[in-house]
Amino acid sequence: MNSAYGRLCGITGGSLILLGFTLLTVMLVFLGTGQSPIPVDGVGYYFVAFTGSVLMAWGLSLRVASRDMDLARVLAPANAMGMALMAFYRLVIVFSSADVRAWIGFLPMGEAFLFGGLAIAFWWGRPKPV
Image 1: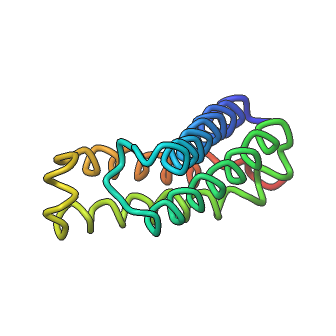
Image 2 (image 1 turned 60 degrees about the vertical axis):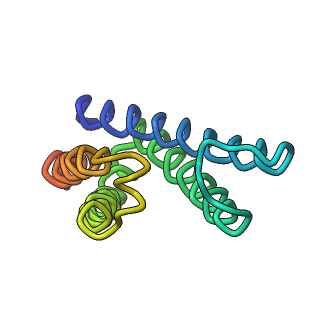
């Protein structure tokens, strides 16, 4: 396996698992205490928990792909597309949502660059067919 691509999958996967676990934990804290750092209501927490669950699954698949070149090759286009979509919607949010800018400023712009860079890395760095 391309060791750099394996590290990309492993590190990104681990980060997604951690983020997903954090979102699920924040939802549980909200359910238990009614307090949370994320300014959403109960319906918003439905989506927070959904996002956390999906990120954990995506992260686990990347962790497995970090050790399996054939799986990494198959998942590369989907990962590139997922990262590109994450970059795109953050750009849309930065330019269209005053609520988000009031809450976290232009942080989503930095995230757009991060996810855009990951999209490029997952696409151009993907293992080549044998």
